[in-house]
Image 1 (tube, rainbow, N blue to C red):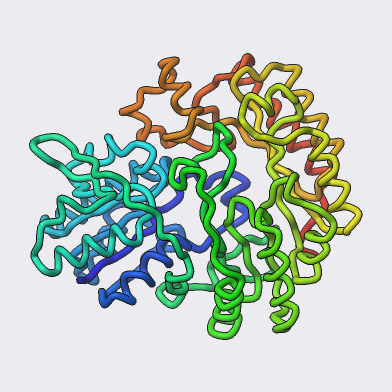
Image 2 (image 1 turned 90 degrees about the horizontal axis):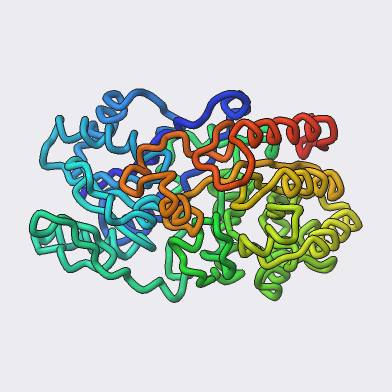
Length: 443
């Protein structure tokens, strides 16, 4: 079947973020595309983060290839524009089938089909669900029993049981980077000298922070690609596409110590000459790991600190202490490894005192790069359930909150300070950080 997979535009880009020109590869749909293409289906990818346009223009671009099925990946802030694009696609061809997946759909499956322009939703891991839908429709067979599918049924919505996760991630083909039309567009000037790829070497996180949507899709189950697969993934990018800079999207790249060391060793043995950065937990960092990463080409380790208040850290389910963050920062500085630390203000029960403790802790850790975000309740997370229970957000209207963002706005406030105070604290943090940050790209 002819299928077009679509990355909807990020309409949140504004202010400084827009000026920075940050464009990241849609790795999730590149993986989907390679999987269904390998099984014999004809696939296109359109990334509207790169192309842009209004809803009508985007629909026209999608429909040029006459797709039989259109698949959208969707984060919560992008759901409204997905609906508008789908509506215009249906005007061109009322029979085209529109499928939506991604964290928003998995977090709010009961509301995924509210608009008639959306025919089906996919919850959980998407590869096997999408393939079964394509195979059955190509044969003219019923798809209503496909696990992981959301569909209309008897004037209502039926959510089929979630399909079991793929046990061996190495069975997945490499991402279909060749279907992205302009690889040179994927830039992030503060981190990379040229275009870069976002890579996934594993899926899932073993922890359960109340603000994080990772658990919504992956259910605290961590699976890894083998070190051999990861090296093949990198070599393919280097040798076929000329890409030598990477961001690993894994929630915690270093959680499997043996695999991390093996990957670093293989990068050196094969003389791949790459730059990359990873995300890690403070309690999964030691000098041997950091030293191996640095020798392999890692130029930055990102750690999520989130708060400088021990009670808040415990309440949000972080599972780490301030002392562990101090030790991780000491290891990183000793190894001369630049690091990025991220913080969240506006946690439930955050006070002026706890927020001030967070800003003071950021000064103490003195990361090379720092991010200061405002707590945002994404569907499916405990934080989202809290704001619904307190009637701050109506569950069936969550997809209309285009203001969902960690920056510049307060989507829902569960702290003990005002919205204005949260924004002022965020601005203060960035004003101080700008005077002390150390660039990761030397101009």
